[in-house]
Length: 377
Image (tube, rainbow, N blue to C red; front, side, top):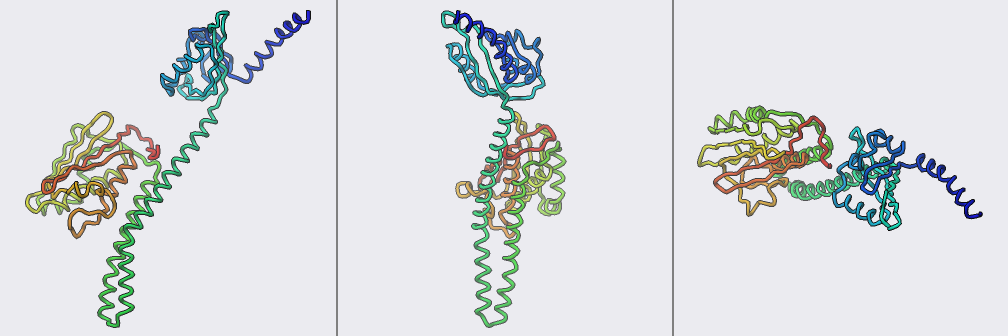
Protein backbone atom coordinates (compact mmCIF):
# COMPACT_ATOMS: atom_id res chain seq x y z
CA UNK A 1 0.00 0.00 0.00
CA UNK A 2 2.75 2.41 0.99
CA UNK A 3 4.64 1.89 -2.26
CA UNK A 4 1.51 2.30 -4.40
CA UNK A 5 0.65 5.51 -2.53
CA UNK A 6 4.12 6.94 -3.16
CA UNK A 7 3.92 6.02 -6.85
CA UNK A 8 0.53 7.70 -7.15
CA UNK A 9 1.88 10.78 -5.36
CA UNK A 10 4.87 10.87 -7.75
CA UNK A 11 2.56 10.61 -10.75
CA UNK A 12 0.45 13.48 -9.39
CA UNK A 13 3.56 15.64 -9.05
CA UNK A 14 4.75 15.09 -12.62
CA UNK A 15 2.54 17.85 -14.12
CA UNK A 16 4.01 20.30 -11.59
CA UNK A 17 7.55 19.34 -12.59
CA UNK A 18 6.64 19.77 -16.26
CA UNK A 19 5.04 23.14 -15.53
CA UNK A 20 8.12 24.30 -13.60
CA UNK A 21 10.41 23.15 -16.43
CA UNK A 22 8.29 24.83 -19.11
CA UNK A 23 8.28 28.10 -17.18
CA UNK A 24 12.04 28.19 -16.59
CA UNK A 25 13.59 26.44 -19.59
CA UNK A 26 13.52 25.98 -23.34
CA UNK A 27 12.39 22.41 -23.96
CA UNK A 28 12.29 20.20 -27.04
CA UNK A 29 11.74 16.47 -27.45
CA UNK A 30 12.81 14.50 -30.50
CA UNK A 31 12.49 10.87 -31.54
CA UNK A 32 15.51 8.65 -32.04
CA UNK A 33 16.01 10.07 -35.56
CA UNK A 34 16.11 13.65 -34.28
CA UNK A 35 12.65 14.64 -35.53
CA UNK A 36 11.02 17.19 -33.22
CA UNK A 37 7.91 15.77 -31.52
CA UNK A 38 7.38 18.42 -28.82
CA UNK A 39 8.43 22.00 -28.12
CA UNK A 40 7.33 24.33 -25.33
CA UNK A 41 6.35 27.99 -25.59
CA UNK A 42 9.83 29.18 -24.62
CA UNK A 43 11.32 27.29 -27.58
CA UNK A 44 8.85 29.00 -29.92
CA UNK A 45 9.50 32.38 -28.33
CA UNK A 46 13.29 32.30 -28.70
CA UNK A 47 13.33 30.60 -32.13
CA UNK A 48 10.46 32.75 -33.44
CA UNK A 49 8.92 29.65 -35.07
CA UNK A 50 5.42 28.40 -34.30
CA UNK A 51 4.84 24.89 -32.98
CA UNK A 52 3.36 23.91 -36.33
CA UNK A 53 6.52 25.03 -38.12
CA UNK A 54 8.79 23.10 -35.72
CA UNK A 55 6.99 19.79 -35.25
CA UNK A 56 8.14 17.18 -37.74
CA UNK A 57 11.38 19.09 -38.45
CA UNK A 58 14.85 18.35 -37.08
CA UNK A 59 17.16 20.83 -35.38
CA UNK A 60 18.74 21.84 -38.66
CA UNK A 61 15.88 24.35 -38.89
CA UNK A 62 17.70 26.45 -36.26
CA UNK A 63 21.25 25.58 -37.33
CA UNK A 64 23.35 28.76 -37.37
CA UNK A 65 26.27 27.23 -39.27
CA UNK A 66 28.55 28.38 -36.45
CA UNK A 67 29.52 24.92 -35.27
CA UNK A 68 31.60 22.50 -37.35
CA UNK A 69 30.29 19.18 -38.66
CA UNK A 70 32.71 17.46 -36.31
CA UNK A 71 31.19 19.27 -33.33
CA UNK A 72 27.64 18.25 -34.30
CA UNK A 73 28.78 14.69 -35.00
CA UNK A 74 30.32 14.52 -31.50
CA UNK A 75 26.97 15.52 -29.96
CA UNK A 76 25.10 12.77 -31.83
CA UNK A 77 27.74 10.17 -31.03
CA UNK A 78 27.46 11.00 -27.32
CA UNK A 79 23.67 10.84 -27.04
CA UNK A 80 23.30 7.88 -29.40
CA UNK A 81 25.49 5.95 -26.98
CA UNK A 82 23.02 6.78 -24.18
CA UNK A 83 25.16 9.47 -22.57
CA UNK A 84 24.07 12.97 -21.56
CA UNK A 85 25.61 15.83 -23.57
CA UNK A 86 26.13 19.31 -22.10
CA UNK A 87 27.45 22.36 -23.86
CA UNK A 88 26.76 25.74 -25.47
CA UNK A 89 25.10 26.09 -28.87
CA UNK A 90 24.64 29.02 -31.21
CA UNK A 91 21.31 28.84 -33.05
CA UNK A 92 19.56 30.95 -35.69
CA UNK A 93 15.99 32.16 -35.26
CA UNK A 94 13.41 32.44 -38.02
CA UNK A 95 14.23 36.14 -38.53
CA UNK A 96 17.93 35.22 -39.05
CA UNK A 97 19.02 36.62 -35.69
CA UNK A 98 21.35 34.49 -33.59
CA UNK A 99 21.00 33.33 -30.02
CA UNK A 100 23.06 31.19 -27.65
CA UNK A 101 21.72 28.46 -25.36
CA UNK A 102 23.29 26.43 -22.58
CA UNK A 103 22.09 22.95 -23.50
CA UNK A 104 21.63 19.59 -21.82
CA UNK A 105 20.45 16.69 -24.02
CA UNK A 106 19.16 13.65 -22.15
CA UNK A 107 18.59 10.33 -23.96
CA UNK A 108 15.61 8.26 -22.83
CA UNK A 109 16.53 4.57 -23.08
CA UNK A 110 14.33 1.58 -23.84
CA UNK A 111 14.57 -1.84 -22.17
CA UNK A 112 17.52 -2.70 -24.40
CA UNK A 113 19.45 0.41 -23.39
CA UNK A 114 18.90 2.13 -26.74
CA UNK A 115 17.65 5.74 -27.00
CA UNK A 116 14.05 6.04 -28.19
CA UNK A 117 13.79 9.80 -27.68
CA UNK A 118 15.87 12.78 -26.59
CA UNK A 119 14.88 15.63 -24.30
CA UNK A 120 16.84 18.86 -24.80
CA UNK A 121 16.66 21.39 -21.97
CA UNK A 122 18.13 24.78 -22.73
CA UNK A 123 18.59 28.18 -21.11
CA UNK A 124 19.15 31.46 -22.96
CA UNK A 125 22.74 32.75 -22.50
CA UNK A 126 22.78 35.22 -25.39
CA UNK A 127 23.47 38.23 -23.17
CA UNK A 128 26.27 36.35 -21.43
CA UNK A 129 27.90 35.45 -24.76
CA UNK A 130 27.57 39.04 -25.99
CA UNK A 131 29.30 40.19 -22.82
CA UNK A 132 32.09 37.67 -23.35
CA UNK A 133 32.45 38.84 -26.94
CA UNK A 134 32.68 42.47 -25.85
CA UNK A 135 35.34 41.58 -23.29
CA UNK A 136 37.23 39.64 -25.96
CA UNK A 137 37.09 42.63 -28.32
CA UNK A 138 38.26 44.95 -25.56
CA UNK A 139 41.20 42.64 -24.79
CA UNK A 140 42.13 42.47 -28.48
CA UNK A 141 41.87 46.25 -28.72
CA UNK A 142 43.99 46.71 -25.59
CA UNK A 143 46.61 44.31 -26.94
CA UNK A 144 46.54 46.07 -30.31
CA UNK A 145 46.92 49.50 -28.75
CA UNK A 146 49.70 48.26 -26.47
CA UNK A 147 51.58 47.00 -29.52
CA UNK A 148 51.00 50.38 -31.19
CA UNK A 149 52.47 52.12 -28.15
CA UNK A 150 55.54 49.88 -28.18
CA UNK A 151 55.99 50.39 -31.94
CA UNK A 152 55.55 54.15 -31.52
CA UNK A 153 58.17 54.28 -28.75
CA UNK A 154 60.60 52.22 -30.84
CA UNK A 155 60.08 54.45 -33.88
CA UNK A 156 60.59 57.62 -31.86
CA UNK A 157 63.68 56.16 -30.21
CA UNK A 158 65.16 55.09 -33.53
CA UNK A 159 64.28 58.12 -35.64
CA UNK A 160 64.42 61.07 -33.27
CA UNK A 161 67.52 60.21 -31.27
CA UNK A 162 70.00 61.18 -34.00
CA UNK A 163 68.55 64.64 -34.78
CA UNK A 164 68.17 65.42 -31.07
CA UNK A 165 71.81 64.47 -30.50
CA UNK A 166 72.69 66.69 -33.46
CA UNK A 167 70.86 69.67 -31.92
CA UNK A 168 72.50 69.02 -28.56
CA UNK A 169 75.97 69.00 -30.17
CA UNK A 170 75.24 72.21 -32.07
CA UNK A 171 74.06 73.93 -28.89
CA UNK A 172 77.16 72.75 -27.02
CA UNK A 173 79.30 74.11 -29.84
CA UNK A 174 77.51 77.48 -29.68
CA UNK A 175 78.15 77.70 -25.94
CA UNK A 176 81.82 76.80 -26.28
CA UNK A 177 82.78 79.01 -29.22
CA UNK A 178 83.36 82.72 -28.81
CA UNK A 179 83.27 83.49 -32.51
CA UNK A 180 80.02 85.06 -33.59
CA UNK A 181 80.27 83.79 -37.15
CA UNK A 182 80.64 80.17 -35.92
CA UNK A 183 77.66 80.64 -33.58
CA UNK A 184 75.62 81.99 -36.47
CA UNK A 185 76.65 79.08 -38.69
CA UNK A 186 75.69 76.55 -35.98
CA UNK A 187 72.40 78.34 -35.41
CA UNK A 188 71.59 78.18 -39.12
CA UNK A 189 72.11 74.37 -39.00
CA UNK A 190 69.63 73.94 -36.14
CA UNK A 191 66.64 75.13 -38.19
CA UNK A 192 66.65 72.28 -40.76
CA UNK A 193 67.16 69.70 -38.00
CA UNK A 194 64.14 71.05 -36.09
CA UNK A 195 62.06 71.01 -39.27
CA UNK A 196 63.22 67.44 -39.87
CA UNK A 197 62.07 66.39 -36.36
CA UNK A 198 58.76 68.18 -36.81
CA UNK A 199 58.15 66.43 -40.13
CA UNK A 200 58.83 62.99 -38.65
CA UNK A 201 56.67 63.72 -35.62
CA UNK A 202 53.74 64.92 -37.75
CA UNK A 203 53.93 61.83 -39.94
CA UNK A 204 53.98 59.57 -36.87
CA UNK A 205 50.94 61.35 -35.45
CA UNK A 206 49.19 60.96 -38.80
CA UNK A 207 49.98 57.23 -38.88
CA UNK A 208 48.67 56.84 -35.34
CA UNK A 209 45.47 58.60 -36.36
CA UNK A 210 45.02 56.05 -39.15
CA UNK A 211 45.40 53.25 -36.60
CA UNK A 212 43.11 54.98 -34.08
CA UNK A 213 40.35 55.35 -36.69
CA UNK A 214 38.75 52.01 -35.83
CA UNK A 215 35.99 52.75 -38.29
CA UNK A 216 36.35 54.64 -41.54
CA UNK A 217 33.81 55.03 -44.30
CA UNK A 218 34.37 53.26 -47.60
CA UNK A 219 32.52 54.24 -50.75
CA UNK A 220 32.50 53.23 -54.39
CA UNK A 221 35.35 54.93 -56.25
CA UNK A 222 36.23 55.04 -59.93
CA UNK A 223 39.88 53.95 -60.24
CA UNK A 224 40.62 55.93 -63.38
CA UNK A 225 39.18 59.14 -61.98
CA UNK A 226 41.19 58.76 -58.77
CA UNK A 227 44.41 58.11 -60.73
CA UNK A 228 43.83 61.04 -63.07
CA UNK A 229 43.09 63.29 -60.10
CA UNK A 230 46.41 62.30 -58.52
CA UNK A 231 48.30 62.85 -61.79
CA UNK A 232 47.11 66.48 -61.91
CA UNK A 233 49.50 67.27 -59.04
CA UNK A 234 52.42 65.99 -61.13
CA UNK A 235 51.57 67.62 -64.48
CA UNK A 236 54.57 69.97 -64.39
CA UNK A 237 57.02 67.11 -63.76
CA UNK A 238 55.29 64.85 -66.30
CA UNK A 239 55.72 67.50 -68.98
CA UNK A 240 59.25 68.52 -67.95
CA UNK A 241 60.62 64.98 -67.82
CA UNK A 242 58.54 63.64 -70.73
CA UNK A 243 56.90 60.99 -68.54
CA UNK A 244 54.46 58.50 -70.05
CA UNK A 245 51.57 57.14 -67.98
CA UNK A 246 49.53 54.10 -68.97
CA UNK A 247 46.28 53.30 -67.13
CA UNK A 248 44.34 50.05 -67.48
CA UNK A 249 41.37 49.63 -65.15
CA UNK A 250 39.27 47.55 -67.52
CA UNK A 251 39.32 44.40 -65.33
CA UNK A 252 38.41 46.25 -62.12
CA UNK A 253 37.05 49.72 -62.84
CA UNK A 254 35.72 50.48 -59.35
CA UNK A 255 36.59 49.78 -55.74
CA UNK A 256 35.01 50.28 -52.31
CA UNK A 257 37.64 52.11 -50.26
CA UNK A 258 38.22 55.28 -48.20
CA UNK A 259 38.83 58.03 -50.75
CA UNK A 260 41.50 59.85 -48.74
CA UNK A 261 43.48 56.61 -48.38
CA UNK A 262 43.34 55.78 -52.08
CA UNK A 263 44.36 59.35 -53.03
CA UNK A 264 47.29 59.14 -50.61
CA UNK A 265 48.40 55.74 -51.94
CA UNK A 266 48.44 56.96 -55.56
CA UNK A 267 50.16 60.21 -54.62
CA UNK A 268 52.95 58.51 -52.67
CA UNK A 269 53.66 55.76 -55.21
CA UNK A 270 53.54 58.05 -58.27
CA UNK A 271 55.76 60.55 -56.45
CA UNK A 272 58.27 57.77 -55.71
CA UNK A 273 58.30 56.65 -59.34
CA UNK A 274 59.08 60.20 -60.49
CA UNK A 275 61.61 60.84 -57.73
CA UNK A 276 63.59 57.68 -58.51
CA UNK A 277 63.39 57.75 -62.30
CA UNK A 278 66.41 56.64 -64.29
CA UNK A 279 68.57 59.32 -65.94
CA UNK A 280 69.15 56.93 -68.87
CA UNK A 281 65.57 56.72 -70.19
CA UNK A 282 62.23 58.46 -70.08
CA UNK A 283 60.04 57.32 -67.25
CA UNK A 284 57.04 55.11 -68.03
CA UNK A 285 54.50 54.51 -65.24
CA UNK A 286 51.95 51.73 -65.77
CA UNK A 287 48.96 51.49 -63.43
CA UNK A 288 46.70 48.45 -63.68
CA UNK A 289 43.87 46.87 -61.72
CA UNK A 290 42.73 43.23 -61.65
CA UNK A 291 39.87 41.36 -60.03
CA UNK A 292 41.11 38.18 -58.31
CA UNK A 293 38.34 36.32 -56.46
CA UNK A 294 36.87 38.84 -53.99
CA UNK A 295 40.00 41.00 -53.96
CA UNK A 296 41.27 43.72 -56.24
CA UNK A 297 44.95 43.78 -57.12
CA UNK A 298 46.42 47.16 -58.00
CA UNK A 299 49.88 47.41 -59.56
CA UNK A 300 52.02 50.49 -60.16
CA UNK A 301 55.01 49.70 -62.38
CA UNK A 302 57.91 51.95 -63.38
CA UNK A 303 61.16 51.60 -65.32
CA UNK A 304 63.18 53.64 -62.86
CA UNK A 305 66.27 53.01 -60.75
CA UNK A 306 64.84 49.96 -59.00
CA UNK A 307 65.63 48.71 -55.49
CA UNK A 308 68.21 46.24 -54.24
CA UNK A 309 65.78 43.85 -52.54
CA UNK A 310 68.54 41.62 -51.16
CA UNK A 311 69.80 44.56 -49.14
CA UNK A 312 66.55 46.42 -48.37
CA UNK A 313 63.79 43.78 -48.43
CA UNK A 314 63.05 43.97 -44.68
CA UNK A 315 63.13 47.76 -44.42
CA UNK A 316 61.26 49.00 -47.50
CA UNK A 317 58.10 50.05 -45.65
CA UNK A 318 59.73 51.21 -42.43
CA UNK A 319 59.82 54.89 -41.52
CA UNK A 320 62.85 56.97 -42.48
CA UNK A 321 64.30 54.31 -44.79
CA UNK A 322 65.59 55.49 -48.18
CA UNK A 323 67.26 53.44 -50.91
CA UNK A 324 68.77 56.10 -53.19
CA UNK A 325 70.50 59.40 -52.62
CA UNK A 326 67.96 62.08 -53.39
CA UNK A 327 67.58 65.51 -51.74
CA UNK A 328 63.82 65.08 -51.38
CA UNK A 329 63.94 61.52 -50.04
CA UNK A 330 62.49 61.40 -46.51
CA UNK A 331 61.47 57.75 -46.14
CA UNK A 332 57.92 58.62 -45.04
CA UNK A 333 55.75 57.92 -48.10
CA UNK A 334 55.98 54.12 -48.19
CA UNK A 335 55.62 53.95 -44.40
CA UNK A 336 52.40 55.95 -44.58
CA UNK A 337 51.13 53.96 -47.56
CA UNK A 338 51.60 50.65 -45.75
CA UNK A 339 49.94 52.04 -42.62
CA UNK A 340 46.82 52.95 -44.60
CA UNK A 341 46.73 49.64 -46.48
CA UNK A 342 47.18 47.65 -43.26
CA UNK A 343 44.33 49.62 -41.70
CA UNK A 344 42.01 48.28 -44.40
CA UNK A 345 43.16 44.64 -44.06
CA UNK A 346 45.10 44.84 -47.32
CA UNK A 347 48.61 43.89 -48.36
CA UNK A 348 51.43 45.67 -50.18
CA UNK A 349 54.62 44.22 -51.61
CA UNK A 350 57.19 45.10 -54.24
CA UNK A 351 59.11 43.36 -57.01
CA UNK A 352 62.16 45.22 -58.22
CA UNK A 353 65.50 44.98 -60.03
CA UNK A 354 68.16 47.63 -59.93
CA UNK A 355 68.39 49.72 -63.12
CA UNK A 356 65.30 47.98 -64.53
CA UNK A 357 62.46 49.26 -62.37
CA UNK A 358 59.96 48.47 -59.63
CA UNK A 359 56.38 47.26 -59.40
CA UNK A 360 54.36 47.85 -56.25
CA UNK A 361 51.43 45.48 -55.77
CA UNK A 362 48.48 46.20 -53.49
CA UNK A 363 45.80 43.67 -52.57
CA UNK A 364 42.59 45.44 -51.63
CA UNK A 365 39.89 43.73 -49.59
CA UNK A 366 36.98 45.05 -51.64
CA UNK A 367 34.03 45.84 -49.29
CA UNK A 368 30.96 46.18 -51.49
CA UNK A 369 28.90 48.29 -49.13
CA UNK A 370 29.02 51.64 -47.41
CA UNK A 371 29.50 50.25 -43.95
CA UNK A 372 32.46 51.21 -41.84
CA UNK A 373 35.44 48.90 -41.80
CA UNK A 374 36.60 47.76 -38.36
CA UNK A 375 40.40 47.40 -38.55
CA UNK A 376 40.78 45.26 -35.46
CA UNK A 377 38.10 42.76 -36.54
